[in-house]
Image 1: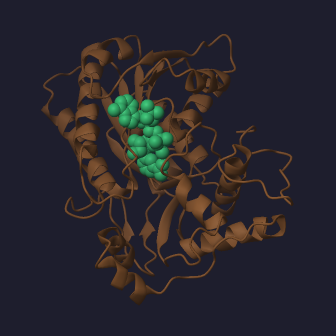
Image 2 (image 1 turned 60 degrees about the vertical axis):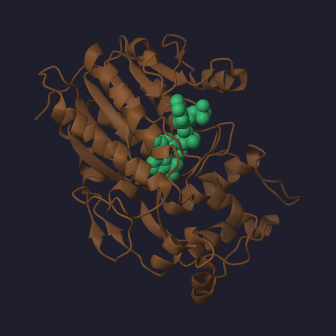
Length: 359
Ligand code: NDP
């Protein structure tokens, strides 16, 4: 078993992201020195937000400019860091079918960062993969970290995550050196929860659309939901947990049907003037539409299926007892209203313990 290694400084790639914000905040709360990477250091709004996360003046937060595709950026970015959390990856084609440049960016970006880590003597790298690299969940079986998604299945985004994670494990095998770092992969489900970054990322649409009744009906498909605070804690605990080394870790609270998400939102927000979608769409109708819109094919293939995942490693190795799905969804909706991403209805009552402020 690997030994516990002292953490001197942690590099967090893609510091402006939804998950990264929570990771940085928890690292600071644990008195760990953090350096974040940002694509453009001229972005004052992003810089201000990140500086507000870092409340401990004895642990100043550093921000450096780096693009995953630019090999020259990474040598100096990782210098002096004992640990790296690699979150930066393209997420803007989440629902798209065509691969485009997503896979190239995800794979090449990961390799560029791992190369810099091995040269700089980084001790451990935490790679943020996805549960979509475990399975596309088209059967109601129980899946575990031993499973890998068939590369021919899924969206452009899931293919980019499968290939980036495979490339990372292969990199580790190919490097002929005793000095190589330990690799840990975190494979979160669909990440929801309090949102405090400036631009709405790929996770926001589902909760926003259901709360605002964008479509009068939702498909009867189950999403593998997890809470961003648990995902952040998994990354932080993975830095020092010896048993995590060279292993994958699924982070999922539960599989939740989209109509159940509507019902959870309705229980909290109906009395506040919102009308969340709770009705289920017709499968034959969506199947018909999928002949014209290929992105709907995955939806109809997973219809009504509630798979299971083995979360033993999440609970026993990373010591995560997941936050309830109801709290995750409700806290996310409140944070989206408070951030101004969604309108505040006249009857809206902000809770006293605002999810954006207290986490
Ligand atoms: P966000 O979209 O909020 O953040 C993505 C981050 O990656 C941003 O900081 C973005 O920078 C950065 N990034 C993208 N492309 C590049 C690039 N070429 N060079 C440098 N930085 C880049 O995503 P999340 O926080 O949701 O996701 C973070 C990680 O977690 C990703 O790897 C994602 O695949 C993974 N994940 C997310 C899940 C989810 O449900 N949200 C589920 C499972 C895994 P910029 O601000 O400049 O665009």
